[in-house]
Length: 252
Image 1 (cartoon, rainbow, N blue to C red):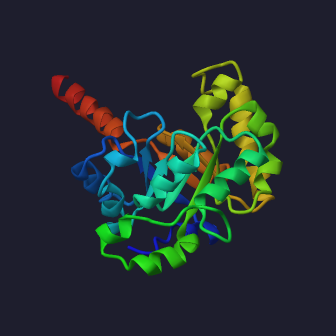
Image 2 (image 1 turned 30 degrees about the vertical axis):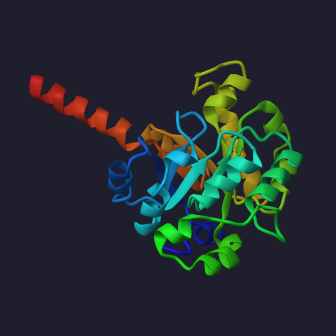
Image 3 (image 1 turned 90 degrees about the horizontal axis):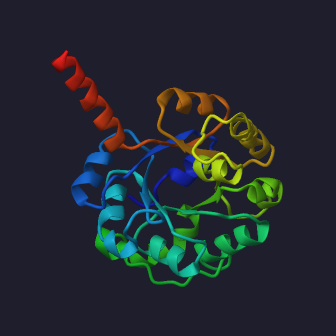
C-alpha cells in the first residue's frame, strides 16, 4: 500500500496506464481497481464533487496497489493539500500556463524543504499506515502532474519543464482544441502535430508526457509517439460500448 510505486515506475522510464473513476462510490472504485491499471483518475475539476466526498476511495485504491490520482479544480494550495491529505498519490493541476504557475504547484504539493505544504494528512489513520512514517517519507511518494491546456502553456513548455518537482506534463487535448479555435475537433491537424511534438520536446528534458484518450487505436498511436502516462478512457464508456454491441448482435 505504502509507498505506491507510481513515482518509481515513472523514474524508471516505464509506461503507466490508468482509467477514470465513473462515480465516487466504494463499489465502483473497488471494481475499477480490479483491472490491471497503475492509477485511477478521480476528477474533482469537472465532476460535481470535491475531496470531502471521497472518504475511503483513495485508501481503497491504495489497498489494491493502484495509485489514486486526484485532479483538483485549480492551482490552489487548499485544494492540492486536501487532495493529498485524503490519500492521493498523484495530484493533477489543470490550466498551468507559465513556469511561475508550475513552481507554485510544486510549492503547494510537497512538504518542506521541497515545498510549503501544511502537515496533517488523514488517510494514514484510515489505512492503518504509520502516520509519522507516512509524513516523513511523503515527498518520496508524491507525484505531481501539471496540465498543459493552452497555446500560452505550449509556448512556455520548455520553461515549465525546467521547474524542479514536476513528475509528468500532461497535454489536455480538449482544452487545447478550444485554445486553437477548433473546440472538440480532436483530429485537427494542428492539434495532432502539437500532440506528436509534445513527447519529443519533453524527452529532451527527461519528463514523461501524458494525455487522455478513449479510442483504443488512438491510444496505441500516442503510446507509439512516446507518451508514457496515459489515461485510457473509463470503464463506463467501454461498458456502454460493449453492451450496445451485444444488444445489436442479439437484435440482429
